[in-house]
Length: 475
View 1 (cartoon, one colour):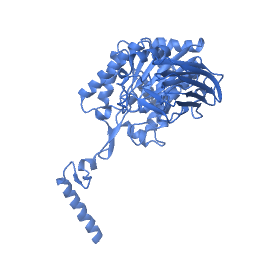
View 2 (cartoon, rainbow, N blue to C red):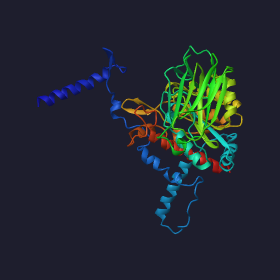
View 3 (cartoon, helix red, strand yellow):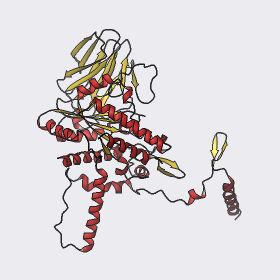
View 4 (cartoon, rainbow, N blue to C red):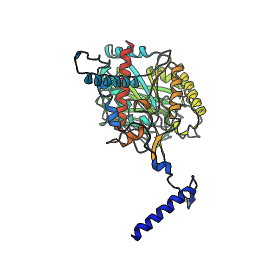
């Protein structure tokens, strides 16, 4: 009884104290002490989808269809009224999901998209090559999302290999296994930029690696964890740049030397192209001195190639900080047919008002126009940010200006004749990230920002379906 009375008195004291306790809390010994407010105690869960897996089941029927939407079956004309009503509601929900999945476009449509779809057929029927560049932030690291899209397009239209790979990577990718000697140093135009780099030679992947005067090796091996078609490749194209003195570059297929270059003219950019006897167990490039490398393309001689180009920490506003002349040369050589730009996630947490969101939209618009001038024959699709959540009281809720950022990116896409794909709505809209985190197994991580591999796979399936359905509508 005494214990109960003590607990009761303590509880009443805490409640009374909470009324006079400062809302911002009191700092003591480096820790802020605060009370849960009455509103937080009685508040309901924020509105949003309750179960991510149940929500995603709503797309299953669409994913199981052919690329074109199947016609509605009207043969059961004499079905019971209740069943007819259920079917009507079901079809209405399917139609809503189809609209969510669509690649949106403005009044001017998506420039060059039909040309890209025609290129898919040429890649398949005439053994031509077609390239897709998938730029993004850390949401696509490790070949997440990109890998599935690549595999599906290669299965349908031909092609193999993982495509563009940075010379040195700090985040392992399932697409390739790679190594570099310790004397190679990696630099990026995004994230925390090294201020000692005074030039703009970062290449189309926004990163380069430089060996010191002793030279070194770059090694690439097929990944056992990637899709079957990505495990095989028969061509290699290594992108090289400035070097201080003449040097020798050698390429080894397994343990056999298959090509050697004497590099004397440091023109700033060249592509070293090799046709390989087959897929090597190991492909090694060895250099006798200092040189810059901007990446390597590992692929087949024809078909579709989809390149994974993640830029951790980037908002997508970095392309103008890369040498225009270098970008023009690389883009002209690779001739992309489609460019995917998946950005916004690194900006959302720092947007505190509509003006900042509008400014970001204008910056992205200028970046798109810059890239379109360098790739005038490519189609562009801007992929908006997913839902992202922060903790407010006891709940995780969508960042307050996420939808404003999404709207400004959509506006930027439409005003530059690009498509726009809305991950935020596709995954469930406001406060959906919490349900993705709580799924079993989880579809998103505990940071309430990044998808897990399983969640990224679901997003990749849905985007691939949207792209293939758009192809059907364009015909």
